[in-house]
Image 1: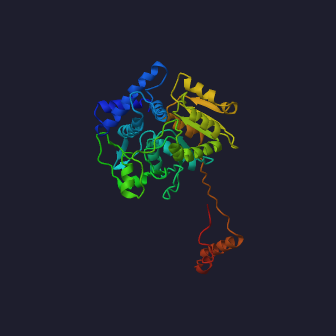
Image 2: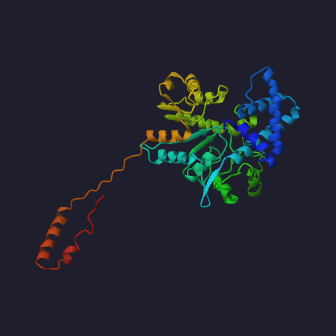
Length: 387
């Protein structure tokens, strides 16, 4: 969400987040304090990831204008609360006949993945790597019976999962207090305990899974978790983030190294995002030849295309293509690259054996003479085999 902070500010001013008002005010006070940095350095205070990173570094340095060093961890906790509440307040899940659906365009996206795995010729293995921490993709995979598999604590009830690596954490991930282990709350587990309360006028609902996360683990498990979900900044380097996410990043890199085709949808490769550049550079080192890398992005200025071309090496450039498309258009474009197998229905009449043919001829002669032929008929096979 490019305008995330504008949306959050609107929710605050419209009194739509009164239960989290203190956290919103704390975050915007910190952003105001960071304005003083502009006199000596450039800092994008309209970008949620830049603000998150600035607060994390402030915590490491113990320095944030207008705040005592001991207050900075509380500001970071408030920012996570703002992220959770804003996402839960703005993402609408459609409801039809009391069933919760998937936001557009994630339902056709999940069907694309099902097509690639089951109908395409040849069948494809699929992994998803995302920086988003909402549960829209998760819901789409859940509804399509494909998991997801987060790469942590395998769900034994999921038999056909798609790997979904969420590199910045997720609204439905909790972190155990004693060990730091990440515990994902699977959607089937959540819906078994929580029901969606009513419909709004547009036939949609909210899913406050992040706000109910610690409550779930407190009520239904013996695991004590942190109060906020696992949501981490783009430039995490502290030991708690490293312990929580290094395994997921490692699996994402492994799948990149084995990929023959990479499709990047909606990601604009900001100049400051060194992590993605390193993930791509190190992750794509492997024995599998890269056949295709396609970027789908609506930018028509050439800036995004230029940044990707500058990142890619000469081998990848030969396989690279930029397509000016939104996400929903990219779905059909990818599907067209992997057509479904053609089903050939062949009916084959198997010729009767010489003995069977002789028996058929004898029976027909007996029928012409008016004889019953029952004893001979019983010798015939009941059916001729066919496909």
